Amino acid sequence: MDSVTESPQVIYLPPSDTLIEQYAHAVCKELGETANPAYDTFEVRLGFAEFLKVVTKIYAAQQNRNSSSAA
Image 1 (cartoon, rainbow, N blue to C red):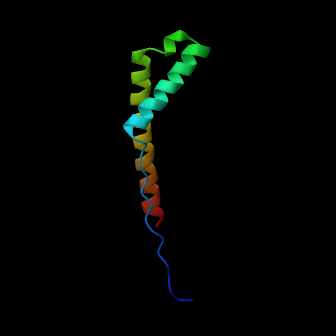
Image 2 (cartoon, rainbow, N blue to C red; image 1 turned 90 degrees about the vertical axis):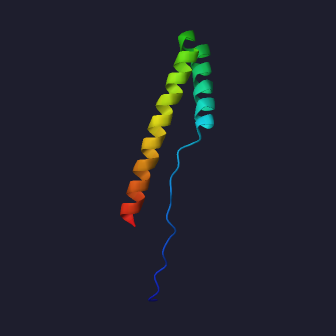
Image 3 (tube, one colour; image 1 turned 90 degrees about the horizontal axis):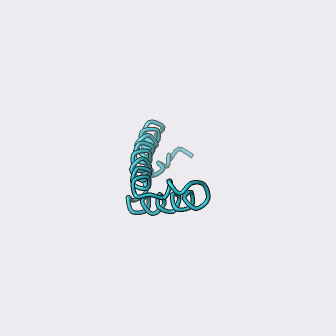
């Protein structure tokens, strides 16, 4: 069979900021209840959410570069 089927390009996107903030809030709340109440503060939740936003954007960009170079 001579025809080559191109697979569609995959584009990776990070989760929405709202989803990340909800996740960070849930994680910090659980850690505050089970490990140390200092984890469940506004500053820690905000910092953790911002960290996750940066990491997920970097990871999505890296996946997109890897995906495009493999094609």
